[in-house]
Image 1 (cartoon, helix red, strand yellow):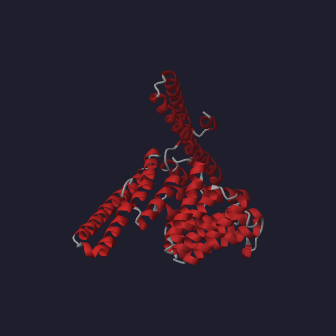
Image 2: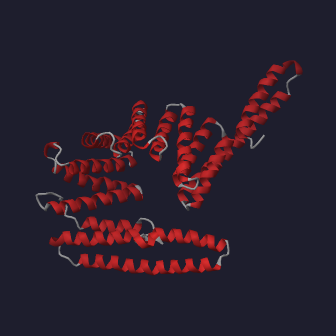
Image 3: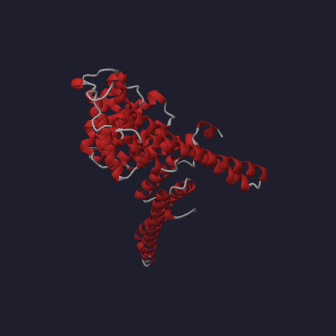
Length: 395
């Protein structure tokens, strides 16, 4: 009801659907009827909002090119409405692309006023972020292009790279960060690094290292170093981000968990599997305390833990983490994540079968030895025991 009240109809629908599922399960007819009424009311509200969005878009299309700012305002209004009712990204992205198409090719103070340039840059920035959130190679490529237009416009506001107003500087840092994020998704490590280094430099100079965006940008820099296989640099940057987040948020915070997860990835690449596992366990503890067990971020970390355990050969324990993650993936109805986890579990099953065969082979070989070769027999059986421990369920 609160989400419907604020106009977030798509999200409201998800909560009503969850409640309705429970109402039917507990066989509460009055509660079920009330929720069905709420869902129908929501459907009508969504239809009304969609009509308003289409009317805004249609009105915008009637305007001549020289009235691009009025057209932009109408299309951004339509986009705001579509965001509240759309399921998934397709409709939102399509409307956002129409917003961007209304903007002149050159976003410059030489061709438009300050207010117009600001509105154009905001719309471009919003579109770049939407493209990255939606995902996909073509969307990432488009995001690099769109964020690049914002970078160029912001740099024009700072002649000779001399920081003008604080808002202008931070605006440039934000645009550089998002362009770098898109480039990271495309594995364009060398192109992304200068952007993120500049973003860190600007934010630290303008707002200081206590700015919450500094460790987030450092984390992206660490991701780039990892992609470049500069493992020592990646570890140092992620550790710096972790310490800054502790200073700002305290140790028991999801941002700190994100840094620990990043550190775990680097440690694993360095061959320090035990240390990687310890860092990821700490991250998972924080996430479970704050998010519970039915959250996609928790499931992602459980998947990571499963992969680490599989890597070190602890297949039975890995299976438990994969199963936890799979349960959540199905709960949140993420088909791609579900499919990936099912593949991991099948791979684990095959690995367990192989390990069990090896254990049985060792035991069979041991049994062939005469009593006087008890030490060789002992070694073979202990090897078999080590393998069984890694795959056995229970004792």
